[in-house]
Length: 470
Ligand code: ARG
Image 1 (cartoon, helix red, strand yellow):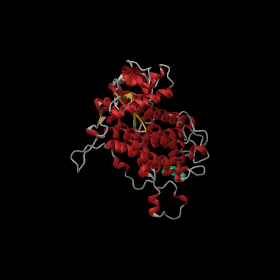
Image 2 (cartoon, rainbow, N blue to C red):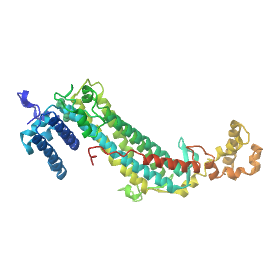
Image 3 (tube, rainbow, N blue to C red):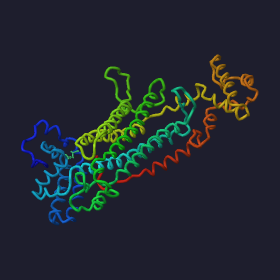
Image 4 (cartoon, helix red, strand yellow):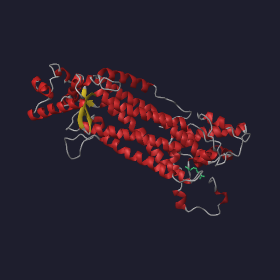
């Protein structure tokens, strides 16, 4: 039986009927729908609408539906179910008879879908926080292994200054830690329960909203029934946080793609995450990275789609809201699949330290250190810059490095240069002068690594009342 057929004299146009259904995609919400229905059933019992026996029958029925769904995916191939709410009602009545119809007393699908989606987003955040903590762990392990190995850093994609490989990796860890904090923040705000909001104006039965909220692991009931049935901010916030996360992964992927090209040869792609070419036998392609870069397009698109769908919707529930689900699921599932793969890639990539170190000692990346040498000896920076610039010019003419110039060449530029300049031009010295918090000096990077470890350890690993979906 449909959930609303009483007032209709004519059947629906069959293609419209099929087209307006959401069960194909909202079947993902089944575990949350069952949990929320259990909470509602207990509130109905407390309100005197269900007898104790009816409550037991309903709870057992809900439990059975959960079991059947996990035993066989076929169970979810229901051609008649309009949406996940209708599916549960149908199955419940099939299992326990007409008493199953009592479950819908005093509630509306509008509050149910709002609740299910909050539970889905919350479980997804919990899942992602765990996965992102593992990703950060992998990055930090690689940073630790890199020790004091150096590489060039770039601005404008031109060699700029040498840095520790660990310092470079920690930059990515910072980006992902910000993603973690955005997700945790979103979780905090979404964790209120719409149950008891009814269709729009509040439940018509005296339902204990606080008890329902507590049972589902929410901090409390939502404050306004109109807002709670109309609101999808939590989905928008979440998918926007995901879109930024995906954007970070795409920047990461792009850099790894560059660094794996023969032109850089800084990293060796892990075979387990690459593929070959059907035409060119020599190829090893960075597929994981390219797909990671590409997935950002999808997730950013999902974030925009959600906002555009909500734009201009009057209060409260409108069926347009059903259209938010697929973007939410697509972004969520894309990220849940991607993050662990990136972690695996990170653990398996090989860094070509020799090549990185060689690259970090060319391109005049010690020029700033030479100017700093003068600044520490009282020379105004602008003049020091000019003089070292001339030294670079001289090297270009002679086709040599700054450290190959004779002391006389340096002193001709500025008499403040003395024999110890050569010590200051060495890679280790150049790295060591960046001795500020957040800088690349080895001791600072060691500190930063320890701090990042602590931040990762304190990532909130919370499990809601309802289990995370797979
Ligand atoms: N499938 C619907 C959705 O996802 C459930 C809510 C339907 N409510 C209604 N009044 N038709 O939005």
